[in-house]
Image (cartoon, rainbow, N blue to C red; front, side, top):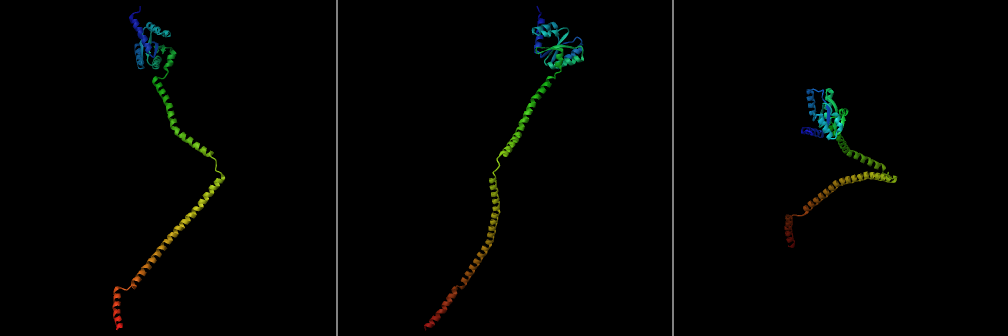
Length: 260
């Protein structure tokens, strides 16, 4: 019968495997304590943890999770790296193994798939998640910029197309008949010829009116002067009241003498 401590340890390993994005197995026997501490610090910066567990308990946890192929890596002094970011943790392990021969990567587990040491190395060469996300966002922006450019160019292309259509319709329009064109030309010539004559007649009439106006004014002045002279003459010929009285007085003695 298994002891409660072992049962608890297996349960914890199972829980860590299920919650992790990836699990890597590496032999650490050739590492010093200082090197192990350095490895743990590096992995902690990538949101991962390097943990040494008993391989018998790790195998039992893998068997309960039906990961029998992962058992091949759980032999000897092996440490397990539980990673939240598979690419970042694989990169830290690969770089550390290149600089320290005491660390040997055996393989890994990614989403239920067992990885060999070579595939872990390939996983380490993938760009970090932040870079991939930035590139993905850039890829999404590119079509948007292209779409915006196309929308901005629509009015220009529409104007060009309309201009081409108008030019095409003008070129396809039937030419005017020769007789109609000739009549239109004659009418235009007659109108052009009549316009100067009308202008000349109007100018002559205006000059005549201007010339007759002073003559009429002169004639009116002359008639008015003659009328005034006639009135003055008439006034001079009429006898005054004194002259009439004197004439009457002179006539009375003459009449009396004749009667005697």
